[in-house]
Length: 84
Image (cartoon, rainbow, N blue to C red; front, side):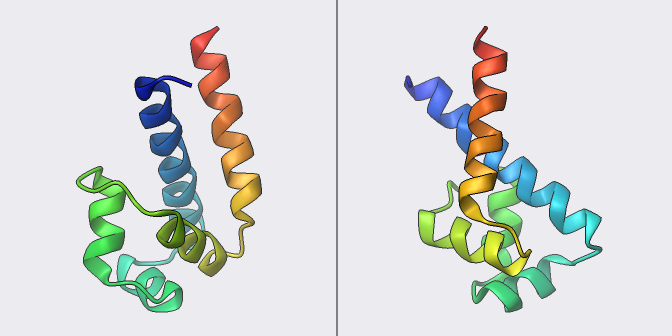
C-alpha cells in the first residue's frame, strides 16, 4: 500500500467513525469523554487536521461499541474498490 493509499485508508477509517458517531447521536465532547481523549483530538481527527494514532482510533472505536478490526476491514475494502 503506497502513501496515498495509506492516507486514503486512514481517511476511510475516520469516515466510518464519524458516520457511527453521528448515527448514535454522540457529540464530540461525549465521544472524547467516553474514549478518554481530549475533545480537540476528536474534532481534529474528524476534520483531517491530525492523523490519529492507533491508540486514539482504538479508543474511539471502542467508545462507539465498534471493533477496530471491523472498521479497518471495511476501510481496506473501500480503498481496494477505489484502486480498481
